[in-house]
Amino acid sequence: MGALDHVQIFKPDKSILRIDYRPRKGTDCIEFLLRSDAHHDNAHTDIDMERRHLEEARKRDALILDNGDCHCAMQGKWDRRADRSALRPEYQYGNYLDRLVDEAVKFYTPYARNWCMMGLGNHETSILKHHESNLTERTVEKLKGLGAVNLHTCGYAGWIRLVIHAPNTRRVGSLWVYHHHGYGGGGPVTRGTIQTARMAVYLPDADIVWTGHTHDQWIVPIERYRITTGDRTYLDRQTHARTPGYKDEFSPQEGWHTERGGAPKPRGALWLRAWLTNQGIIEYEFTEAR
Image (tube, rainbow, N blue to C red):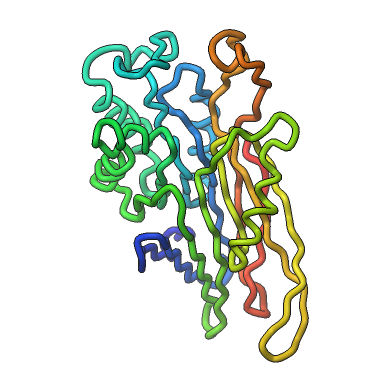
């Protein structure tokens, strides 16, 4: 039996997704695929890379967390940015919004069991604002009917609480992840890393701050000097992680990204591996998914 057989996922609050992991002895580690900005329906999205990562998540028994903009949804006839050349063939006719959902569900169904979070990005909130249709909720509802029993719709921002229980003891650890789809343009020099200093101020309880949106990739650790109510000082770390997505806007050498002088952006996602120590602390590590 794999890790997913020992996971319980629920939402105690509309802005909190709680993941409880009760491993058996010898399976104390849980893994996650952190992804955002897939822009799945865009012709410039690296579908092969996206599929490869999802296949690996299934092999690893990892949970899939999506931080928004799974749908690109920019090519409707109402959108001034629309460009038919940016559409893959299966989207170039008929009921566009419905096809966005149906084609995504078709692609993601083999990985439904591993999926536990699908958040909203600015592309989905734009459709919700102008067309009163929540593409993310519609995608989740269909996937839940096809085996995604652990999948939940999350908002543009919110909390993920990971709780790991040690087998055969009362030892338990908790890890808080704040997810936000992202904002701003990233910046050609800072690539958005300046936001880590701002977010660290108003998110003192987060162990990990996870963002996307700008199609950059980085991991920025911030060391902190803390003190307990029992007058004990200690050091801990808040890690800021940004996931890049799967869309390659640079290689075509035409269109809005090229005209504004946009640079190449990384593609991929991040693996997060977490485990409980003998001291009841959850340790974790990131690796790049390419």
